[in-house]
Image (cartoon, rainbow, N blue to C red; front, side):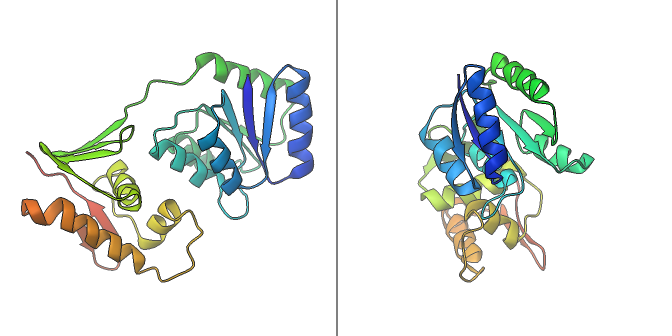
Length: 225
């Protein structure tokens, strides 16, 4: 069983690795969210143990990015954040379990084994918003029966809006999710990509489903076929 541990506390992560290896696991380590996301994309793991508070990219963003890309590797969030809403947010973003540090190694091991036994759950790979269909597996987009070709970044922005259709998402939320907290330029880049999406998904069909909410952000609304 191959496990990825993503935690910026190097001594803790190394100790966890040794403990898991003693139980027969094969363990890879990443000490920040960016490296963890890269490894999770490149390697097929049986489970991911993911810290939340890390420099660069936090665990919430790593989890949401993987789920948005259709990666359903079981994720166990292991963190010192013990608030009820912290746990709710982690689970709502797609984590499969949430364990608060410190915890006994035997308990963590049992939770991890249970997670792996359940395996990768069957999850929907298509987002449907009215007559708009977004296939996360093939990265294909259709407005009704008409295919719409998007760039990788346009697709990522659309997925972020489609996952919470009808909900207003701010520029900062879109930047953090799509540009992975690494973008240091003008936040108006979000407006540029919103404009691209409107030109491809709304204008040709005489629709207004990608809406601006003044002073708040953007939302994707359904339109019946």
